[in-house]
Length: 230
Ligand code: CA
Image (cartoon, rainbow, N blue to C red; front, side, top):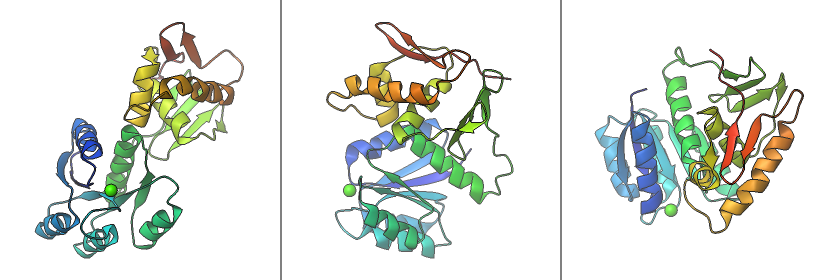
C-alpha cells in the first residue's frame, strides 16, 4: 500500500530502523529528530500518517500530536517508553490512533501503520486472516489476533512477534539470533538465550493434537511446521 509516513524520533538508531522497515513495505518515509521540524512538515502537507515519539528534545510530543490533529487530522501512532502508562493514556486522550511501547517489534509497527492506513481508506482491500495447516492455525494481522483450532490465543507481544515472523515463511528455519532481531528489532545482551523460554511458552499455548506447530531444529533454531493454505 502506498502512502507517506513521517517518523518523528530523536533516537537515530530507531529512526533509521523505522525508515528501513517502512520503506521495505513500499511506503515513502520522511524522518526528523525535531518536534518543531515535524510541525513544519505537517504544515506543508502531503503526510498520510505520523509515527511519533512523545519524548522529544525540543518541544512536547503532544504539541506535534496536536499539530497532526489540526492539519486535516493526520493519523498518528505514538511511541512510548515501556511502562509509561501515563504517556499512553495522554496520547490516546489527545487523539492518537494507536500506540506502540518501546522496545517494539518493527514488523509489528509496520503492520499497525498499514492497519491505520487501511482503516483510513475504508478498509475495502483489507486482507482476511491467513490460514495454516488446513485452517488449524489462523492469523489475522490487521486485527492482531491468532486462533488455533478455533480458540483465540492470548499471546504476549514477543510471542506474537515470534509466531508472525515464523508464519511469514512456513517451513523456513529461523535462528535464535534472527528471531531476536526480527522480533525486537535490535539485539539485547543475553536475549538470544531468553528467546528459548519465549518459544517454549508460545509452544505451550500452541499445544494441541495432532502434533506440533513449531519444531526445534537442533543447533539451528525454530520453524513453523504447518504449511500456508491457499
Ligand atoms: Ca525520545
